[in-house]
Length: 105
Image (tube, rainbow, N blue to C red; front, side, top):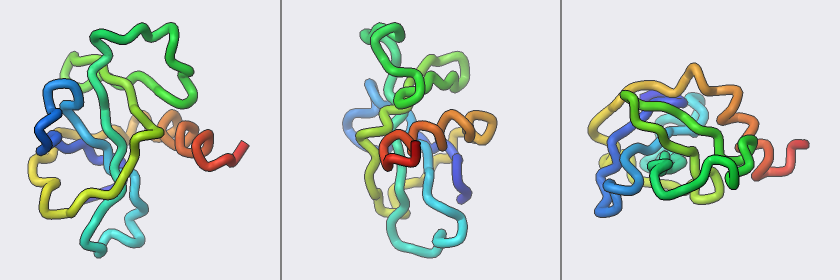
């Protein structure tokens, strides 16, 4: 498990939120929970209405999703079972969204 890894959403809302992005630092990876941000399906939303610095758009296997940064939360590590890839190439956009939430501007 590593920061920016993508996981299939194990929850009942996986149709609208197919993936979770782990954003927790690798330094504290031994905890029982990990901080994740939902990757919500873009269908049904207008990309023009989403502030790009808070809700960056990320493609996963041809599926357009947006990072629903304000909905981040902790999930038990045991629930993150199916790794679906990595969002490492989007780390700058993800960190920018986290900075916006936590006021690093």
